[in-house]
Image (cartoon, rainbow, N blue to C red; front, side, top):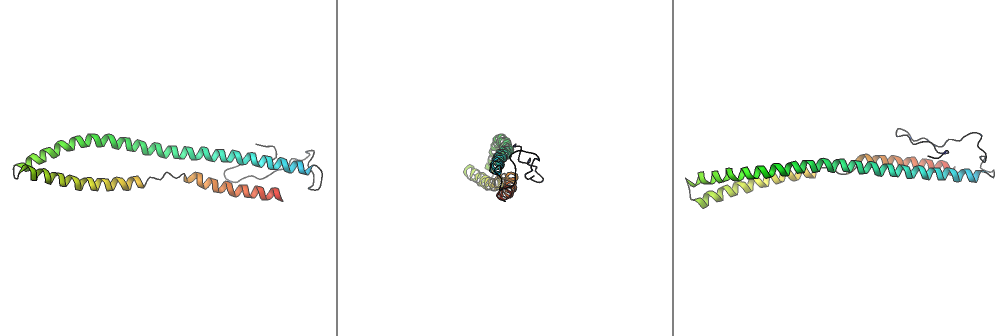
Length: 161
């Protein structure tokens, strides 16, 4: 941070502070005031760059956490699905052979297949609703950027005065 710009506090953004006794600082009409305004603007730009870098880092961390959580869930779901499908195939073969005792094999297989299609549609609908509920938007970063924009506006307007 620059000597002329206050540090950024997350609860309230600090403004400019003047050091007393600095040479070259005077009233706006004095010869050294141009240099101090230039220093203030330079310090302000440095602070803004640091804030933007911090916001980018925060956004990356938020998105990384959300993606990591979602990918772990999807990997577990894929493993469980593979094992479940294998077991389910054998159960449905058993049901088909059981129904074969009361009807022809092709009718038994068709009835089991139709039941499986209905179950698959229900499970797909549930999975779709769970995946669409996943929010990958970095809400904290967006809120923080809005606060930073307001702070920057205040800083720029105080430099202009």
